[in-house]
Length: 305
Image 1 (tube, helix red, strand yellow):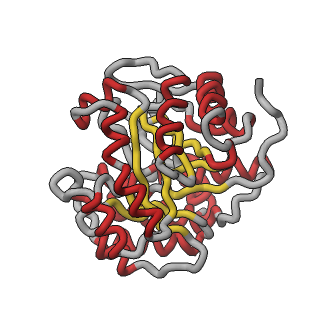
Image 2 (cartoon, helix red, strand yellow):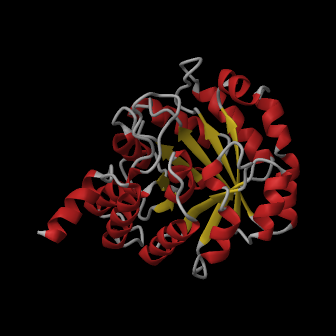
């Protein structure tokens, strides 16, 4: 089933500043977030998920998003993305001069009903004005399919269900679509089946893998995705992030670990792993805990010996 000719180049989307930090209980200042994003920019990322324009009532950690976007040292050619769940969020993102807006839909009806009290179809329809506005203003539009490999409420999610949401996001005009293992239950064969089903509805080159490492499968799932031709992956510096639906979840796969894997496979990413390790150690010090990244901690230890 798998194509053994791996991609010749991989794009890593760094999601730590948004998806990683949004679950932190302690308040992280805008200054620290800006310093983190600036370090990640210097590392060479082409795409950094920097902010989320949602109600501070629901995600207090993202209340400083406008301040953060105003303070970062932008590098030409780098996409700075923001999550925009509605038109109010879109207007704020537009004012903050983001380069890409991100919308999302669940592949699980149970998850959609439990979390936002509406069906998948209704949730996607709510994003139509956001998608239209993004196109009108020339912004890049990215879609994300959550619970693509399992749901905390209904359990199994079929590849066909994922492909259906991919089609809906495609029809809204998305330039790129993420296949997200929100609770980290995916395993390699299931991942390949889901990616191939999604590729029936959307160009393979514009699909990305967003894997959480709750069950320790993220790197294996990334390799499985590479085998079927996926060449875009999301990761979070220092393994920042968590999953509120799976107790003990370690959250997003660590960027340092993904870069170490790509280095070993001889696949260029354009990102300097040493600079990323430093960024991971920087934010971990501010959070008062050790980074989750095994490769990051090992490299940092070796540098300090």
